Length: 498
Image 1 (cartoon, rainbow, N blue to C red):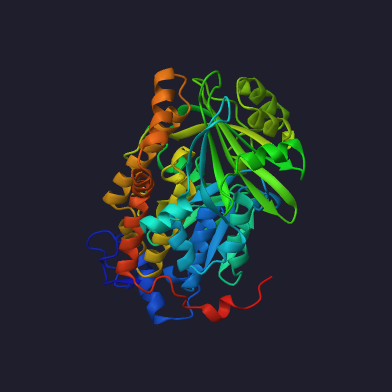
Image 2 (image 1 turned 45 degrees about the horizontal axis):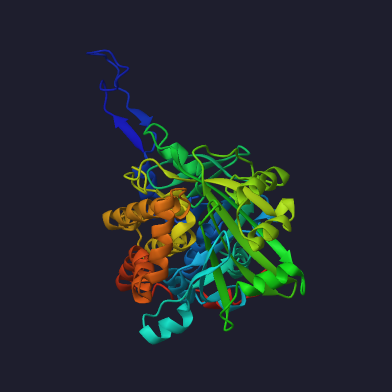
């Protein structure tokens, strides 16, 4: 850290100077010299890369699962969530389909999903105009016969969030609500993240789990034409409380022909009706609710709101009033279900994915990664959005936990195979959104006929095919690290947490 100059050789000395003094100059230490000094003096004040937490942007299912996987391996994290704590577990009327590979992740992590999720007995396909049955897919029964191992589960957003948040241990996972990411800067061995309030945090890596409108992605690809692409479909979702013995309750019971469990109802476009209506009941201590969604084709996207827990959609009377005219020609159950929903429980959104599907999921500096909807947003018509996010979180953080080199771990997560698989999934989700909401009579008729007459085995195999890219991604990391689902800090996790 010091440079000694012999007589007459200091830069300030003129040539042939009679000055015979020795000059000692202080050299500003480089990061490489600082790391060398830390190995000599263990009490040096700056933390090493291994001491720094992983910074997670977003406390949705993807962000919380990331923290849980890191927590299992004794790695600390800071979870930065833009929304307030009151909205984190709020029941906003939305839910998720949990696909087989995501269920493997949840089982691998030992999470108590039976008390939070619902398993479908089957899918009841109906015409939207008359509520006449097109087909009943008794998935639970037929899968047992076919031996395919396919399970169909659903989870309310609030219940999934509750399950994940209850498993967090504050010793490892520092959840900070109301402070989103503003910008980030990658240094040689760490990431500096600036928050919306002007403060900064340092981490060994930054995982962007902050959804379709990711602030991290916006900075990462701000000059590369990476814009959200409207898919031409508008969606409303909501929940309706169904009183026991009411007319609406009777109509709902008629939509549930399989008595051994919940039936997912899919009302297909037909006749004078427009778009498609789908949903399922939820029975609990607080009574019976029907969670529903209605989608229709629309060349113009709707307006936007500020609540990112509702994907930035419009909420309240404006959303409900816009839905009413769309249901002209729909069956009685669809119309009454929407009419009975409280305005604050109705959300209207446009469905978006990305115009560019060729961009990497990691930064050039190698310390920032995109996960879930921040990496590959898609329409919900394959039911793979939340499931893919949970698989991303598991794979990425399992690799981080088993590698001392952050860049190497994130590079392995951002594989060519994963990018290609997710590109295909996003395109398929967009295609099925357009088919399911088409106004063309031939498309609607052909779609209903295919659903009515295709062999059930073909339908099930197609459902499993949509999950293949997640299955392959999960299998690869469990083969590389067979022990990645086991806890290295189980005693700490069993401690009572505040």
